[in-house]
Image 1: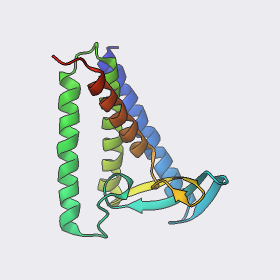
Image 2: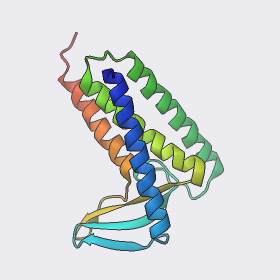
Image 3: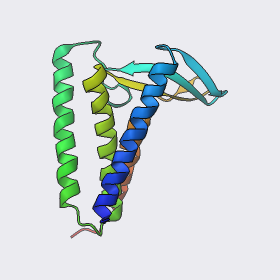
Length: 158
């Protein structure tokens, strides 16, 4: 298997994990139900996000904004695929970053198409500080974006 093939297999595996965890949460917890996992640090909570990553631009059902988010998501996905195809196979870190972003975008888009919103469930917190509730796809996008920034900044100028 080529490096790019392996990265696509990783992305596919992450999409499957994302969808399985979201399905388990949707089946096992009522909407907004919370289960403590590590007191003072981690809860599982079934929530829905009709906006972008971490609830950004959550719009309360505004159909126009929903179409704008869907279109922006498709454009972003197309760009990630374009850069993935154009990235040389020897650039493993860049391919990893793009694969993670691809997996996250596909996972959340599947939710938007199937449910009209994204299932979020990981609630990290310390005291009164709560990170926005997220899911496996959001984690993939965040880690991939961080890795992408790292790769871009460590490159030597031409």
